[in-house]
Picture 1: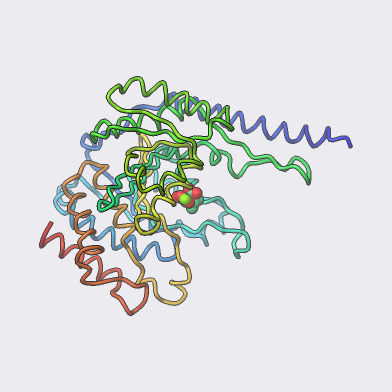
Picture 2 (picture 1 turned 90 degrees about the horizontal axis):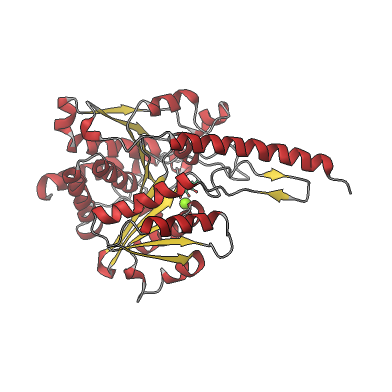
Length: 389
Ligand code: IPM
Ligand code: MG
């Protein structure tokens, strides 16, 4: 068989990918430092409901944030802006992961609170548009996906720093079918990409008095890209002599997270994109499932905070969206508050969430009319803040 034509076509596609990625490297080199929210005249908070149950639950999180930031809204320091249109229908109609006008509105904000967005799967009625989450992380260069998991009664307090723009995700939708029989995907790593996520993890550890940062890779097998991640980790670790830096392979780390004697020793974990994706679902499961976790996506200029459950379109068709559980996006809202410097308000919200969902549970959301509505639950949280936080 002569595959000259197919190989030439694949090489051409690969060449284009390399050009795109090298352009990204140049953009990263030109990037400034993290934005200083205190110095901004107005912090613009975009509220992007997404689709399915998203707009309903995100509106409730917005009410709570507006309540906690009432003075700041009044003085003009904080402004809210609702961004519609990140729906699967519009994304399909425009064949875009994020419609151009929505992206423009997102870029006019400083931070974004985002509800769930539908990612089409094989067999769904939708064509295969790229995931809006992944597209937003790339378009706004949100390189640090920070996912905390806390179970105080078991001594678990983990913070995952998942690299969010590179690895298997960088060109995940641009693999090459070289022939009918041969498919190739690519995983991408850059010095700049490794440095910024690893440094962010160490800086977080330092600022929060954590004594250990653990890198998780599979550098024994994926030698080039994971190897670079690990080498960079070891280099940067030298700048933080007071913090213990160790590294594990992803397979054994997956096992150690269920080892009750060892798991509580981990504190901050930093890892490439795909490993971070997988292990944070495992970790969130100990805490009560992905629906209980919030997720922060942080870049130097923008940051986005999201619920990490799905958009539950069936709840909408059955008219049950008003009974959807808003807690994950409310938790994301608390992370947003802390990120932009309102730590006192964030702490009140975390405390109220614990009271309302764990200790007191006066009202519960069940997803149906057997429980309260999302709006009633948001009222319960605000009443709790007023009374005891
Ligand atoms: C996550 C999700 C996304 C990801 C999906 C929805 C594209 O699993 O935020 O962890 O793979 O990153
Ligand atoms: Mg995931």
